[in-house]
Each structure stands twice: as structure tokens, then as C-alpha cells.
Image (cartoon, rainbow, N blue to C red; front, side, top):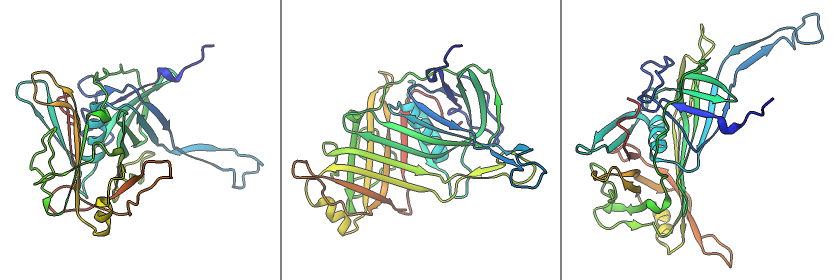
Amino acid sequence: MARLKGKSTELMLSLFTKEVTYDAGVVMNDADACTLKGYTVDDDWPDDVENDREEITGSEFTTVQEIVTKGFTASVDIPRAKPNDIIGLMALAMGGAVTSSQDAATGAYTHSVAMAAIEADLPSIQAELKKGGIQYAYKGVKAGSIKLSGEAGKPVSISADLMGSGTRATSATSFAAKISESWVKASQGNIWAESGANISISASLVQGAEDISSATPDDFGARLQKFDFGLDNKLDGDFGFGSEVYQVLDKNIRELSMSMDLRFADATEMNYFLNQDNLALELDFKGSQIPTASTLYYGFQLVVPRCRLKKSPNPQGGPLDALTQTLDVEFLDDGTHQIFLFNGYNAITAYLA
């Protein structure tokens, strides 16, 4: 008997096309879906299985056991993320409209993603996972949480916790094509910060240029050691009556998190905390051109229009260490912009259309 290997696992997500109706599924082909590459996945069926072990049955042991409700979860981790991975998963997690615009007549596209409104449902997709030669299709899949991270000298990573309705069926559908793109790397990133009255958010984000200042913002590029950005949709489901899978699956009050580890330079960031100054932050990753005739480059931008430091960024380090500090961010609603802005750039026509 052959030993089945985890390396043969395949995961396909309909990141290009969302379900028209929650839990209705998507036609899985190259136009609607992509097969991931360079990831790990930890999936589970959190089914509710009940039995009569604790009731009087005339037997010392269980006599009946049944599956009462069905579930599906998958934690996907991509340690060396490509633009398609980042854009697709961010769009799924953010949940709002994705506006995709072509750069002139080239094959390059800008994807501007909006946050779903507080009362709006998140979009759902179909996922197909093949492991050990067994392939299942999962419908009604949404993003529970997402984490985007970068470390100096390394590629950017992204991870997502996915949750489905529980609807599942064996499948023999061919897996869609993998997207060929280079990794997004820390070496391609520009990181800026601006404070107080000099904060000025561009009406349209411009790749490779700062979009947060009316003056000259702080450039964190040489000092930044690591960043982490997270969005948790607090997904929760309702079975209701008449169904063994979630008839409703959606977000609760969402949580955002962001931190940056910097080489300590001076008291500037300490004063940002002490004075509770308003800050704006921008991450701008610009890789290779798409294609050479385009004015766009593979990458993404993430802008926080207003935030404050919620913990003191005291310098840390031992007597033989270079001092560092951590900026721990509290997102603030400025009443004008969405809570954070995201643009992605690559050669894909559209996401979650």
C-alpha cells in the first residue's frame, strides 16, 4: 500500500467570482477560480455528533450516534505571498465592493477594495480541497479573519481562517490554473507615517508615492523590522430549523489590529503616544512592472487614515542589543474615509465579480 503524501494536497478558491446566493456554489474553472501554490492548510469538519451515552437505554454503552449539524473550517497560511494571494484574500475578508480598473490598454489592473458596511453580508465563495486523493467541494465559504505580515529581509506573508456553511460534497472537478507571480518582498516596501495637521489622504491612491501627507512624512523604511496587520470578522452562524448547515453565516462587530517593530531613534514615537496624536500610516509595496507597457507594478497599498498608539512604545533591549520599539495601533474612524484603504495591483481582471 502506497503512503499518501501531504505534498499532493490541492486547494482551489473561487476568488474571482463570488456566490450569487449564499451557499449556492460557483462553477469552478480558470475564469472563476485559482489553485493556490506555496501554502499550508489545516482543515476540519467541526460537525456536531451526538449519541445516547448519558441516557437510559438498557445498555451500558452507546446504542445510537448521529451527525446533527455539519461544518467546515480551513486555516490557510502562505508564507511567501504573491499579489494574487494578498488581493484575493483581502477582498474576501474586507467584503465590500471591488472596483477593478485597467491601466490604459495594457493587461495591468488596479483593484480598490471597500470594507463591507456594518449591516452588509460578507461575500461567500466555493472552495475545493483534495487531500489523500479525496476531493470535496465546500460552499458558502467566508473569511473569518486575515493576517498580513512582513519582516525585514523576507517575503510578505498572509494567512486566513476560512469558514463554510457546512455544505460539502465529493467532487471530480479539475483544478483551475495556478497564478504565476513573484513574491511580494520587504525589499519592495515603502512605509510612511504622518501626524497631526499634516495628514492629508489622497482622493485616489498612487502606487509608489506617499498618499497621507501635505508635507514630508516620516519614512520608516530603514527602521522597520516587522509589521502585522489583522482583520477579524468574528464570524458566527445560525442553523435555524430545517437545515443541518448554517443558513446564516456572517460577521459580528469586527476587530482590527496593527503593530510595527522599529529600530529606536528618538522620542518622536513616544511623544505620539504621550500626546495622543492622530497618525496616518501607509504601506506601499511595488514590485516588477505589469507588463512592461504598463504604468503599474505588482504589489499593494494599505493606508490607515487615522489611528493612535494605544500602548507606550518604550524602547526595549538588553545591554548588547540595538534598541527597538513597538507601535501598537488603535484604528480611529475619521468620519470621512473608510477605516483603512486597500489597493492591489496585478494582471487579474477582477475579484469576487
